[in-house]
Image 1: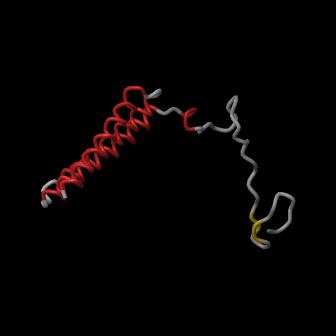
Image 2: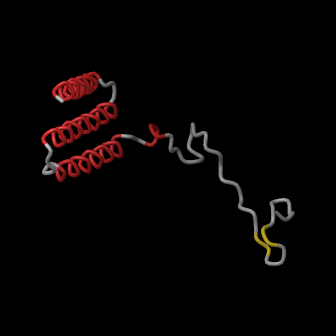
Image 3: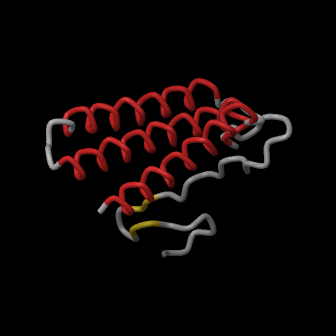
Length: 122
């Protein structure tokens, strides 16, 4: 059991160090935000492993709270930092937009049902 605990500690420590390196050297704010979310996940894993090794469930509310806070924080930061151009959500008709202009919607004839643009039925 001791070897398993040390293996878990070593893997979680290596993951945390790699994530901290990404947080420091990340080229964009979104990379740093993602790294902080992964660091929260590593902390959650460490607390879960500690709960299993010590055979208690008192950290379960902390695990759930950390999961929710980490998710909401990452989504909030990503939403505010990312612009329309980063997400590729350009509107049709804007200069440089590759989104096609909207076309006219086919009509509906009560007798024939849905009618194509050329007048035929679908």
